[in-house]
Length: 184
Length: 283
Image 1 (tube, rainbow over the protein chains, first blue to last red):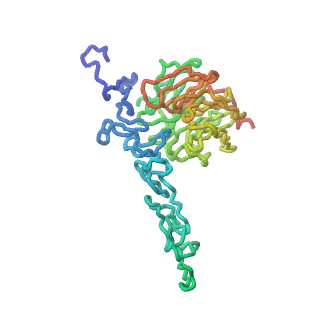
Image 2: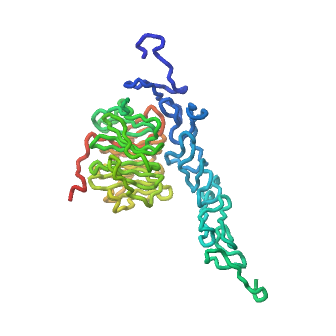
Image 3: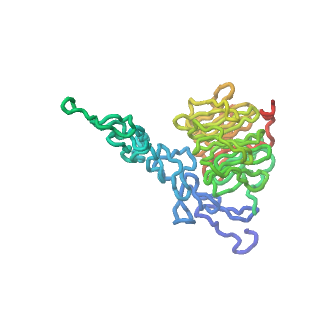
């Protein structure tokens, strides 16, 4: 209040450099009005949607607000892509998940960080007949499903050479062909 | 305790969200009275996406995504009241049926549309299939219709159904990109949308299926509201509310709040409810 006539009438804004502030008329509360890009809140203490950090170090070490870091696996048209404080990614796409959308989600395998979306995470598609417990998940990296005895292929879809009867659902059985009368 | 809502003078207003606040601009005729623009509500710890207005009780409703919830407050002053506080993923669109006293919202994490009474009771899922990124949702209370848009990049669409979820149909699927905003004007019976993918604003009469481009080359629309011959949309690149004359297809005005961050939903807060009776009251 500059009308009191004392040297302490005007106080500096309790805001980061460059921000202006105003007094809320009814309550007398001081709020920052022009927080730096990416920040918001009464004291510019929060990050805007799409950004994360702790610009004033209120609950963790000071970290300026930065754009969500989600391995290019978020959609810029989405809202709430990451947690405003921790940066945890909340809206991973292309079948990814993890804190930074840096892993394939359950039931998918491949490289979540591949530049081309088509090369990222592919479905495991484990064959139900050849997979232990009819699991739908596979090795995150190789995509290998967990096969029943004597079953082969990444997706456990065929019997090993010399074995048959994938249909049993218990693995494949040895063919038991007579070596003398068989061609292989 | 200090009241959170700064009361609005009578008249028609635009209400729009800007991260942790809901702002308003009074309308005088079609003109935005920019010098009288003010915050209605300041909740810095939240990220407010969609806003809707109940013309009967003069309440603004909004969705919040940081700790997902739906709340309301009287624009004549008072404290916000939470109406839905659990089992929400990312509520991004909200619409009010002022005649039926219900609200509808989209959830882009749960990929469904829900309905509840305005106090949050009698909540149920209305549409739970075929949705990928549902966002904008709009009601046409006198005719009992619901409209919504899904910005699914692989197959964006605008759909309609009755307010009980029955008679669901796709209205538009071709020539869409990211249809973020949707609005319905009951006077002209026009459904209009703003698309951040095609950078176009278009309108159609849902019954007739005619479709007309209002404007092209717009930057990044998010929300859209209608009032008479005008459309007002929020833009993520311009951080502004832009007024467009629907007949001439020209931009007529722009309002850029002092705070430069993204603007989200926008709604026209009418001084009086439009005339029309509840479709359920007819028989």
